Length: 162
Image (cartoon, rainbow, N blue to C red; front, side, top):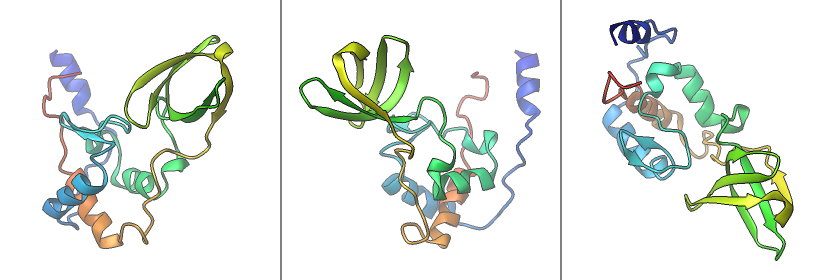
């Protein structure tokens, strides 16, 4: 464990030293805008990635870019798909697992579902992220600074966890 703790301390991500933004206000913005899809320290939604350690593994610029243009880089496990069943039902969700015969998704209601590909009429991989873009018209630059101020305070609640 000492070796693991040492290796975790060798971060290649620069520390978030930007002091702009109000973390308290950023927490409120996160709660109203992000928490329905993203989890922090066990609280929040399941559709987006858990952000509990995001400031430790991504730079401030990378997080800002992901907020402004989420379709620029979509992580595996968060690729959007629309399935159409044989009876014409459309199901939109995120691919969680897939093999030659089946596909497992988390739908937009956070329900895990599995389908045999032979029983689907169509499967369309979406090019855009399920996360909406938060451009300046949707999230102002000062609000983004506050949100990033909050995100920069996030640390793993259990530093000994892997």
